[in-house]
Length: 265
Ligand SMILES: O=C(O)CCC(=O)C(=O)O
Ligand SMILES: [Fe+2]
Image (tube, rainbow, N blue to C red; front, side):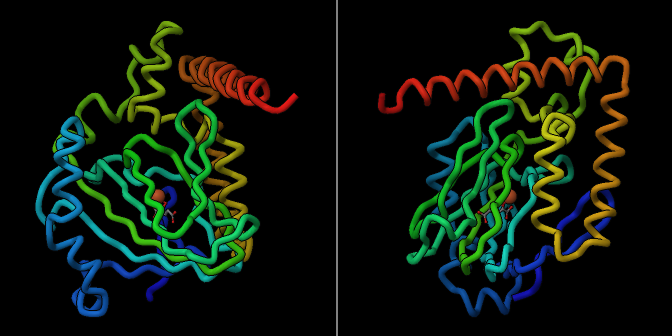
């Protein structure tokens, strides 16, 4: 399987230990007929579109993609990202299906979802488990895996994704009343500030994934820090980031206290 490449800033990098077969490729279609069917037929995308009408999922093989992913272990992981980082992507829904009958706690490779400002959700990549989330508004990563790990992903495009109000930050966002910040946190505009709000987590996840490629890691970290410093120094954006950080501490703290309250005495 070919190595997986990903974009960070304007450059393209190889992700160590991650290999992917894209079902658009006709050779992959011949080797993996069941997965080809998920791309070419409506058996999965059809019912998803019916059950999630608000996503306005698009029909036909041109409106989705399917990839098989092999993580060779040895720490292979994905740094924090959105599956739809903005136009021209049309991805609306991500559906990952795991195929690891031997997975044990301690193997790593959990999918870590970071719903914006809210506590992380960990998904162990257990056999037959599927994780569905919105491609344009769920920040996530894959924790380093010390064991081999297999999954396939179906991304389905949406007719309404990346609309005019979904991408750019405006003066109206920056002046939002406290009550409007939670709505902001559920919207895809969060993508414009996620690297600054999760600056430390982005940096740590890049380090974990790229530690065996120090030159490329350094390039990424510099780009990341420059971007974050620029946003934090901005006269209106800086204070807005401060308010988001405070709300995040409050929401994550409240969830922590709740979890503690539920524990055994
Ligand atoms: O392997 C996973 O659990 C998710 C992979 C992922 O985030 C992606 O392919 O975009
Ligand atoms: Fe992803």
